[in-house]
Image 1 (cartoon, one colour):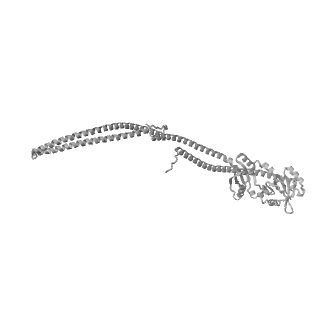
Image 2 (cartoon, helix red, strand yellow; image 1 turned 45 degrees about the vertical axis):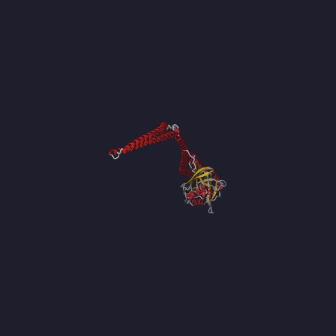
Image 3 (cartoon, rainbow, N blue to C red; image 1 turned 180 degrees about the vertical axis):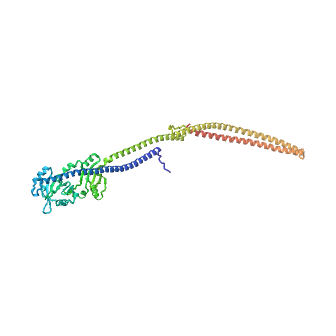
Length: 530
């Protein structure tokens, strides 16, 4: 026996499928949108970072040029001061100069210090006299590059290693900012100039503190640019210029000369091992590298861009701030899309509910028609196919109602006529039977009389010997024929009477059957509601 399947309404099927389709559309489009938005975010962030990095690189080049010009002016000033000190010393030998005299000149010229360097008998280059006691006896032999340049300077030759110098002339070299090797404790940084007066047995070394140099370059140097960019751009969390050589070999930062630092300019606090690995790899493959890094729970987009000078511009951008507007825009798009789908679902559901209610009305009408209620009608007022279907169904009901009413009337009339016919047939059968019996008896009596007469007539002819007579023979033949005709007519009359009786009996049976049919038809019509 087949199991009865549970019926599921058309509305439930439609709304369920519509909801699933809209949900699938929302999920698929949302996934694609998120994917493309993430792609767009990465592209926009990369583009934004490239713009910032390029502006920083260009700005650093420009500010480096400006600071180099300023530093060159300072170098020229130190060179001029060196010449002035040589004039003040009036060609004295190293032994004729004392430290107090250097202190006076230092204070007079506003320097951080003045030292006199000699090339001693041990082939060492040391500080012989100085306005600062810590400088006296400081040897430069442990710095090969400086030592080689000083040797050339004493010999009135051009310095061989000019790449480590800020400026040089035939008898003077000026170093970039370098750490003092003679001061103990916290490292101190100075700007050193070295001038060998013609014919002198010493080198004049005036120097100023690095802060005095920074004071002139800070307003236009890379640090100022980095600070300005950090303030103007809300996405920048950190900005710095790094030296990957020092990250590979941290001991370089401890060297006094040449001065090397991990962080050349700016701030670099968000350090990770991945950053260090990236910087070290950039020594061999100087390609721009960027990635998203987590720092104390915050997403940071880091960019490392190599420069022509071998340095690396480092940027830490706020990934949340960069991606926030795009995510907000995408969320608005997704929400608006979902709202549109929900509105579409509600409008479709509302429309289908109306269609479904109209279908239910027509269905109810058909179900009532199925039970025999031919007064059932549906009231669908929509000007569409369902309205036309309802109107057609109502017309069909009216037509069936009229047909059944007419059929009921005809069946009733047929029943009445059948009853009347049955009664008349019954009476006719009785009458016909009586008439048949009477006529049959009458014709038989008449046949007997005619037969008796014809027998007597035949006997008379035979007794009078007229049989031999031609006329007698004709009479006898006529008598035989008359006897036969009488018998035939009597039999025919009897047969006709019997046939007519049978016909009336058959008519009575058929009228009875017709009456039964009319009764059955009326009983069936009575089942319909009209």
